[in-house]
Image 1: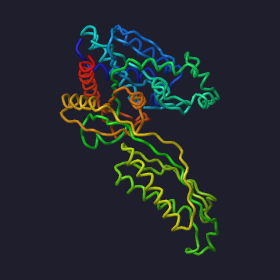
Image 2: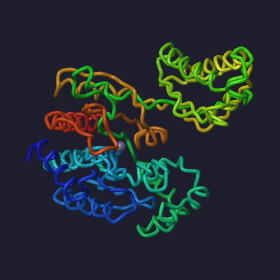
Image 3: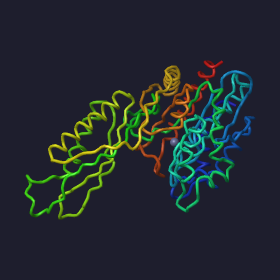
Image 4: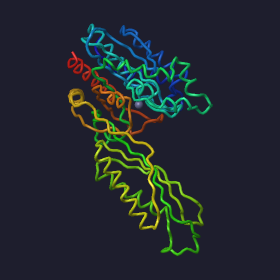
Length: 409
Ligand SMILES: [Zn+2]
């Protein structure tokens, strides 16, 4: 049975019917619908003879072929956000099944080939993304905080995951799954507008952005809106506004992106000059030095604008992560595979984090392939990709898997 990319599109539609409703995909991790999706996947894989295992973090593995040698891993996540799209995560799981079928048909692979369905990539129920992949990568260190998380209905995370045989105490045992990993491949929808704007179906992902998240608070003086002359004001919002515009140039000159995602002003009434403006700033770059440069430039600009408005300014780090670069050899293979199936390839960074970033952090050579997203939309039922592009993406993943298998053998 040769590779049949059209079947992948058909099966993705089947999964959408089974686990979605009029508002979109409802495969939230640690729910009945998610379990139903895992059961559906089990049935789809069964014809290949791959052996299933659920690890200590709830990740679902299917292994084809045994023997020595480093394993080829293909991974995705079947969980979705509530009212999510039909392709985010599930595309690679379902495309991976098709690749497994093709490989199984040709006999026993030279090294083990493993499909992994990562548990709770989205973190939709408890707010903790990349649960299963961070456990497998060994980077999960927030078990104490996770133990205290509850969902909207007051169900605790330990209770919810316990229903699926997972405990925080043992989750890190999933690390053994990556011990014999030789390479990790992940196909994903782009979730952004770049490939569509270039009118090409597929691209290779260079890595995931490093991120700096900060809370920047400007402090001026509340004063009466009627009696305070314009040149006597200490307006915190004015400084925040200057900064919100300045970060555009900082992003462009450093080849990154900057977003002021929120500003809360106090006292926040129409009759007062703003005393405090608390801003949320998100900065991302593929290059660690340029990321540091963007942060330094934003701090310098904030000081300048604070002086201009006679405000004080204070910075607080909310969260940060280093850029994660994918493997040069695999990037080359992915480029070739994409060119073979669609003529043109393009290299781009990933804004969102993915399970692939966790696997790469664990030291496994990793690469991702993006397929065009229509209108760049994701995490909504409007998320979509042309069927012909989905088919090309399955073909590209298959060729990439073949090349990588040869490399590992
Ligand atoms: Zn995803």
